Image 1 (cartoon, rainbow, N blue to C red):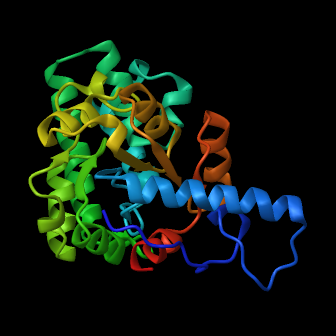
Image 2 (spheres, rainbow, N blue to C red; image 1 turned 120 degrees about the horizontal axis):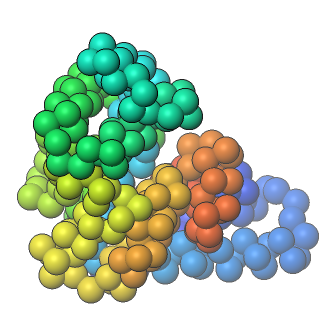
Length: 264
């Protein structure tokens, strides 16, 4: 792995970087330098990078709202006479994965769950056509691959959806064949570390030499169980707070400083 110094490329306290034109107390500067060193070490030590998909790589539902997808799944269940299958909180969650997992807990392995999962996959495939790339993700993935790290995707989304998006961005070669997404074993979705363990086993990687990049507490919990170092990506302060509250110590609000570290 090429080791290069981390440059100052992004303003803001949550990028773990310090800019020379910002007034800092000595204690804050020391803390920031320590955090920058931690970030540099995470990046340069990573022989294998395990990416969550929706969030760090793209905003999957940018043009096809996840809330509407969840509502559609709930409406379909109600049309089957299954209104009482979900709690009020699950019906109002506006998260399609919460709806799917709730049904699977009550009817594991059933045709009902298989049909609901296929409906979610169809909605995700629609969303992939209008997904918004996360800023700096494409060049970061290409650069990281070019300097010798191997990439994998470990996600709760359908692997068919991931494949469609990667092809549209010309990124397939950076990951193939290492895409580990949702299977019929829905109880193995993150925070279960199943998809991370599959990736590590297939790539023959020691967890300590890998790095997980995710944007949700479930990503952090899965990495913790798998023994993989974790870097949180948070597109806003709300998501950053959720990650930190879960225990994540390293969180960035932009991928730009990672790209700067690799490019020198």
